[in-house]
Image (cartoon, rainbow, N blue to C red; front, side):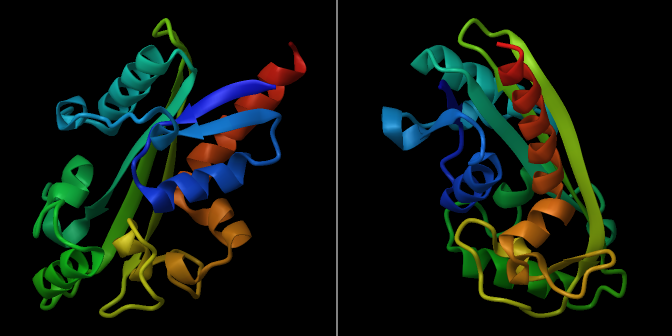
Length: 203
């Protein structure tokens, strides 16, 4: 069995990714298993790819275990260039609760008629020597609701108001199976899963 560290301190994100990879012969670790945190300075890149790679490389080299990291954010048409890679640090900031952050966001969007948005996720898998084993992107376009369509998932506040195209539910109201198919992270992680299935088969 191979080992893989999922480099996120976000409990909701760790659970999502773990569920998508659970059928693989991989021993999955979290940052907490190593008592490791990703410094804020690591996530200071200008793109999802840069942040994702830096996180994966840092954690892999610190732990000696191959690492999967992703960076994601939302692009909101009405708030051009405001969120993106800065999504969780935007607005009310990263230290407030999920509900406080979302309340601030909804207030900011209150008078906006254009509710179109796109979630983007870039994932990297890096080995302890810093070699890139895989990288890929997942994107999902949709609409932002005016109020919560489902309870907030810890660490993923926007999931309660983002409704993907051709879906009748917000992200947070979807089953795991449904979300894995249509979400930006689901699309990116399905590609990661396919990579591991192929690479582990050839070992």
